[in-house]
Amino acid sequence: MTRHFDRRLFLAGLTASVAVPAIVAAQPPATSKRPEARPGSTKPLSVTAEEMIAEAGLSGEAAFHVADLSQTQLLEARNPTLPLPPASVAKALTALYALDVLGAEHRFATQVTATGPIEDGVLKGDLILQGGGDPTLQTNDLAELAAAVKATGLRAVEGHFYVWGGALPYAQVIDVLQPPHVGYNPSVSGLALNFNRVHFEWRRDGGRWGVTMDARSDKYRPEVAMARMRIVDRSGPVYTYADEGGRDDWTVAQGALGNGGSRWLPVRKPELYAGEVFQTLMRSYGIVLETPRVTQVLPQGRVVAERESEPMRYILRDMLLYSTNITAEMVGLAATAGLSGRAATLEASARRMSDWARERLGLTDTDFVDHSGLGDRSRTTVEDLVRALSTPLARAELRPLLKTIDMRNRDYKVMPDHPLDVVAKTGTLNFVSTLAGYAEMPDGRDMAFAILTADIPRRDALSEAERERPAGGRAWARRSRLLQQALLQRWGVIHAG
Image (cartoon, rainbow, N blue to C red; front, top):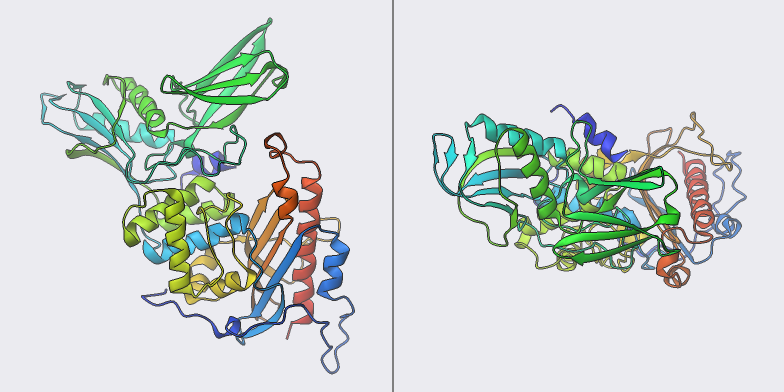
């Protein structure tokens, strides 16, 4: 299938059983030992992993686990059973969950249905925009759907216009501890548009402010009324949010704006958002719909037009590359629905995924509160992560979806000719940095590895105002990434055949 290029710009076989690898069945050593050189070897093995961790100067905890997949052999481990937040590495397990339950070829369908007959181009009934859990739906896709409705010969609708997103449970936010205005923490439902983000743009001209809230794409710029922004004269906070009159009511501190700019804000009323945009696009084709009405009960009707997503494997590849939280939540919720029926809440679905991980992958110390890793109450261990990565499902279907990790020197500059070939999933929260994936050595041998670092007390001490850019957060994360690089390069040297 041809990939939608605008989506990339916008974002800037196993059968019934999953084998538990023997390489992680035995209890590994609690700390990494100094390796001994092989006979005739001249490799510099003087620096241990413990010394690397000490040199990194990280506060908090550090854990790692690395196994040789070629010989089903544990190589090194440190704190292998210490539960720590996985951050976005959780998305790798969510991808496995979706691949196992729904399959790599699964597609999500967004439909327009009608409750009555169409006579002489007039619908004698209601029109429904029906979400099917597609996390990748964008304004351009809704425009194509509107064009498909027009192509049926429909000219007018006598009844109401309903919007339904009940295929998945609604969650106002993914994680309640995040600042209210960050676009990576939107609402979740069975109907999501533009990753449930609305575009806020401001311009100052002659002392007057111009503000727009729209669902823009590279082709369209439909404004919405369900989200409103007011500029106020205050020192802080920068943004406030309230649910006022059935719409998203935002304010922003004037002093934080400068003369112009833009950003994507989270949407808290996703069905209404998609409904308003679809109403505008239908009007551009000469079909006037009434104000959208959000319904909790799906009216029965026949399909007028349908838009299918790309196959699951492409959705997951982009999710892992761009680390999109809402995609992880929606595919995780969809997998739960496919496995055991629609979950009541996002957290209930995450618990079901944790149960699946225990039952199908043999993970013993993994408990999630969401599917994206945004919530810092989720826990896993490096031993569990390597166990999951070592399964046939992960090696055959997840590994090709992971992104390439460049090898970098101490100045964090890319070393393009480095012989280690690494693909992995990264994860970052404030004072949490994680990495898990695969490393292929020059001789073709394979390693599965996981590295988790976290300073939980330091993270817990942050106020809401500090959570977006905490003091010392970038420096801490950089030290963790340098440690990850050092450990990978060490393993590539001392464990090469």
